[in-house]
Image (cartoon, rainbow, N blue to C red; front, top):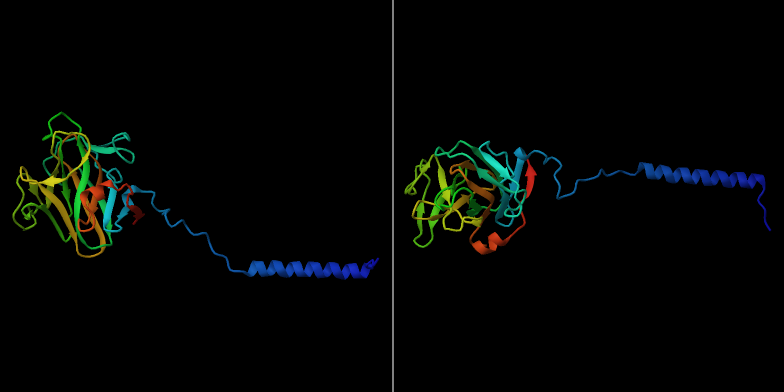
Amino acid sequence: MFTPSKIQRYFLYCFIVMTSAACSKDSDDSPTTPNEPDSNTNTNCTDVANYIFNEQNALLLVECENTVFASTWALINDTSNATGTGYLINEAQNNAPGSNLSTYQLQINTVGTYRFIWRSAVKEGTNSTEANDTWLRFADASDFYGLKSSTDHIVYPNGVGKTPIPNGSSSDGWFKIYRSGNDLDFKWQAKTSDNDSHDIYVQFDTPGIYTMEISGRSKGHAIDKFLLFQPTLYTENEATALDTFSAITCQ
């Protein structure tokens, strides 16, 4: 049997050490790639005031409580009747739009005309014509109007220099958005113009970030979530059946 001498063992040891050092050096010199955040996670989204809701496939679905809401709004943590953490309810009567203000930043990528609708409820009293409306404005959109599809009749909010204007209250670009019917619980509906209901439409001609504003009006009106969708691509039933909320990024 061959037995290496001390000298041979010494040179073998040196060869192993040198090879290991060379391998280690090659590894250390390799470029490193920092950990990249998950594509679905924005680590900057810790402040709801900076939320931007991203439209995709001509549709936006947003929880109403995902904003810095005015002090006259209260968050009701009732997940049995609402999605997310609950719903917002207006606790003060307000006939002057622009106060009790909450805003939402919307990233529109697909230009075109969208229908607006939200899921709301009457949470005070039993009269379906009370506690049933909230102010709404899209001041920087290309157009914002109500449409009665059966007659193609259009109304514009008062104060924007366009006519005709809706029946009932409206000023400074604000529509009064109401719901009707004897079923007081949450449902998808958004109308304007008293006794002559018109659906709500918003037109965006350029991609970008737009501001949606709500202002409390009727005490006891509750809103859960809102939806914007292009009616040329979705029916109302198709759009309201979706339950995937829009991605949130931050400013």
